[in-house]
Amino acid sequence: MVTDSPPDGAASDGGNIDICHQRPKMCYSDVNSKGAWSRIRRVVTGLFRFMKHDAKRSTRTEAPGGCDRMRRNGGEDRDWRGCGRSEAGSPGPQEKRQGRGRRTREETDSRGAPRNRQEGGCGEMVMTDKKPPAHNTKSIVNYIINRALKDGVPLTHLKLQKLLYFLNGYYIAVTGRPLIDRTFEAWDYGPVVPAIYHELKKYGGAPITTFVNDINFTDDGITSDPVPIPTDDEVLNEIFEFVWNNYGQYSALKLSAITHKEGTPWDKTRKRNPGIKDADIPFEEIQSYFKGLTKRKDQ
Image 1 (tube, helix red, strand yellow):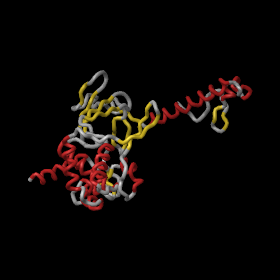
Image 2 (cartoon, helix red, strand yellow):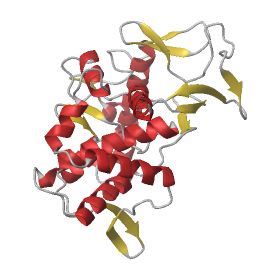
Image 3 (cartoon, one colour):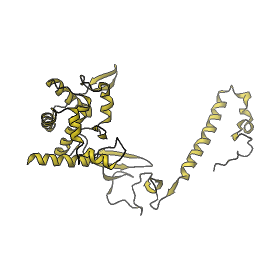
């Protein structure tokens, strides 16, 4: 237990332990010794670690299931160790044994794709998607840039973001999996992938003229090369032609206005999160909305 008073035999000066009084061999006469300061650092470091550990323990309560829980989010109890047990101490209804001392729980990630969560010791959590995204986001961005340059169509950053959104939406509706490995956020001018925004914001409102690169670390040094465009995804190629022919003709502001219509995923996300300008647009809403569009087009 940590107390406010120094240990027995130690003098106190302003709340600090007088190690020199405790151990005469470590007085200032020995400051030139290499081992003296090392011993001092070990003592002080050990004391701080003990105090930090004691402070953490004081904020935890023991749950009926035998797992340490921490009171969070206005009184909600959450499993702090990730032990994966129910209140009665037995595995939950959706949990299955896998290997030694591990369980998996069928869940859904932020995009709605099913995943397995493996839970081990304290705080250990490994996520694996059953339906991973089909492509690297930058590869799809380069797909759009390549087509715009080929057809001589001016492509601003804002317009690219909206075309990327429509491509992702229709791809989800057809395949049930995300096209890209990034999440769209509901910004003022419509759905935006923040990583791509920061990559291309240097263009402002001017047309994009170069491809997006990846930084690679090799034995020869650091290289920056354009991310390859996918060529073997026939479903993507068909959806791209549809989106390009139906939306590529519109201006960036027109595309932004389309994403702002009543009942769109962007509209629902903004209404559900008033005052928040960068809330994630849920996978389920994108999937449901674009499935509805594909059904209307088939009729």
